Amino acid sequence: MIKTVLVSGGAGFIGSHVTVELSQAGYEVVVADNMSNCDDTNYKGVCAILGKEPPFINMDFCDSSAVAKLFADYKIDAVIHFAAFKAVGESVAEPLKYYRNNLLSFLNVLEAARQSGAAVLFSSSATVYGEPEELPVTEASPRLPATSPYGNTKQICEDFLRDCCSAYGLRGTALRYFNPIGAHPSALIGELPRGVPNNLVPYITQTAAGKRERLSIFGNDYPTPDGTCLRDYIDITDLAKAHVCAVRRMLDGKMESGYEVFNIGTGRPVSVLELVNAFEKVNGIRLNYCFAPRRAGDVTAVWADPSLANEKLGWKAVRSVEETLAAAWAWEKRISLHEE
Ligand code: UDP
Image 1 (cartoon, rainbow, N blue to C red):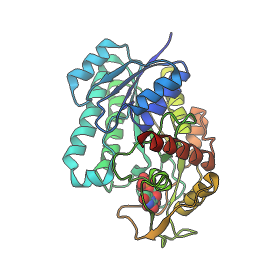
Image 2: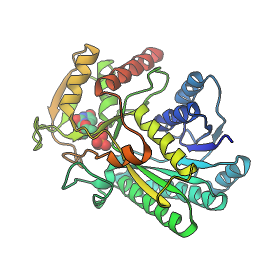
Image 3: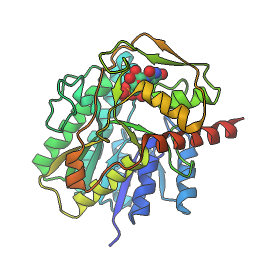
Image 4: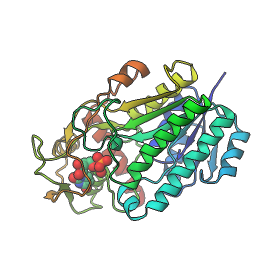
């Protein structure tokens, strides 16, 4: 029996890559998105990669009747929830917008799962670890108080899922992503930030493409080997494959408890400067960059201990930073040329 997986926010950066990997692994995928933060570039790319069009529903997950209708129209075995606002700075300025959207949409998903019995995968984040005292972080590392409403919604949604699994016997998984970067090897799907990118890699590729004059490296006085922050950059295709493993584990009845949490990272800390240097080297480009003051809210260092996911999900990140940065640049070139 072919299983059906609903991907909310499936037209976005992570959702589109997950749609591809699930579909290629033999799942039927239903894509739903309200297109509030993207256009149809990635959905079209998904169709081109797969050679078919997964069903697409334009809908808002805050609309409970639309969510109920979706679950009535399709027999959903599992739902992966990406549909959420994700700009940290904006969440500080507009907390109600973030709490309303990110919490209500997930409550509607949980209600539909309670009624249908669908398994639920929530896209969480390493942001729940804050500035960790011990590195690398394991799933047992403490969750520290969130420093933004966005980060808080990740913690709250994890708790929603945990409590619903325990009360209603649902199956739930939270994947805590470290720093997802790169693009599909086909260069047909990738990251498409609106306006000035907040994240490092899109800023790098847009600078290389001449869309931005100069990259600012935020802080070179951190207590790290080269003074710049350390992160765990994970290839988007590697990250997407972790979702296939987690869905399979839930649907095949392999979970050890109703609610499980996994770190999705490489276990390898990379500094901002190392990442910039790797981008320059692998793509043969000199990047215009300068050192700038620290960015408010940034933690010094965070990287994963991914051994639980390696063992229980049978998943491991395999792509090198160089491969990933080459893919990010191939995607940027395609998008930049397309726009001109
Ligand atoms: N960063 C930077 N310049 C930029 C964007 C990001 O130096 O234009 C740094 C940022 O300070 C952090 C790292 O790159 O140390 C990763 O930032 P990003 O926003 O991509 O992800 P985060 O770790 O904040 O979720």
